[in-house]
Image (cartoon, rainbow, N blue to C red; front, side, top):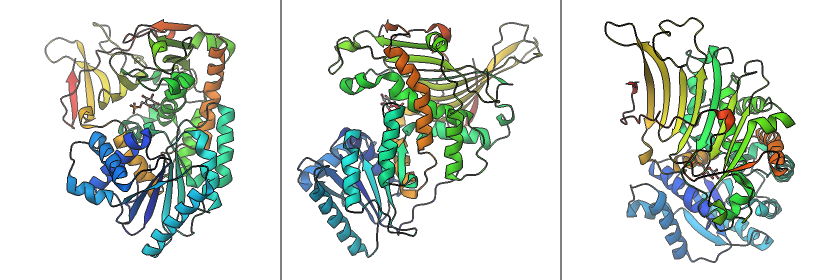
Length: 502
Ligand code: BG6
């Protein structure tokens, strides 16, 4: 993968956050900017314009930014540093549909640029619901803020969040809308899973080593499982979640993004388009559904009590857990089962990819005692770690096998703040113009093509909605076994590669 360029301290950059008073800015964007600032990764000439409908004084805005930093910015808060940090911020109250507000935004930016004496880089973060996109894009274009100044300086980019549509057809309409104002190289679509350390690391695990890649296919691998089991429930997001459900909330995006990283062909060069195309191409080979496979290989369930959550329909048919079994119609992967599942209120959180290898054709000592297949696990929760389970001779006189495990432990989760590591990298990459970990329009389309038939089948009730007790696992037939939650011999926290013994 392309290495990210160091930020140049000389290129003035302006970040405009539309919806700065909202949840996304508070939980993700502001704390991540603080993280970048603390690491010395913000430019000297960096300016953040918070844009929202609410009318706020500078003091009130400062309180808001301070609150977000204190709440989610980690434990290294320092008043003096915050004062310097906040100097980069200003607030503008405006209406997303009002051309005068955008004229004021334009003037504000033009003043900053003339004080710097250059046409600045501009990054527009749409931290607002998609229903506002059209007005904002149109108004930005009216004042020509979508047009880069030219050359290497003065670029203009937009950052947008999932959902990228609610199905293939709305995703296509969104693509049309975006492309009428911005070119693909200006559009940065965020799937924060691609910015998770472990998920980024898959590329290196595969392509920077000569350990597995040569057998990374259906000749050696027996099964791939990707799971995103959360302990939290829907909490206060009832009205959003009820329209979406688990499959569209995390399946169509995060889980398929991880699958693409795991199975894509080697892009052979670090060109952004080569990497994004490689991910899209493999997703395009996802096996089309048939009526039979939809009924046999898809599963949906809802936890008891979900319908009592504020904003959730009393007769809601929305799944809070799903499981799918599929395969890739690709010579390297054909006939290899891929199992994807995700859910809320699943007890202990388990987010991981498990690759189960085939049993060796001639296995030495396997006949003595229990012997399971080797596994490679990319685990995101409870720890960021890569684990390789293997069999070795038990030390001593007897010829018996015992299971051991190589574990590469990245860092302890406790030291992390949800979303902040990922979003700091999102912002850093967007400022640096590294689009490789942002989702392309082709990836978006390929993933909707795969999930749309499932959503339709469930709407037609072709697959019953099962109820599960919160903090239990609904156990779909084709998963055979619930996740082995005991396979979490949590590591001591050292960052070395270690061997564990079960
Ligand atoms: C978000 C979903 O995209 O991802 C949430 O909307 C989900 O429902 C979250 O909880 C999971 O992300 P993470 O980084 O906490 O695993």
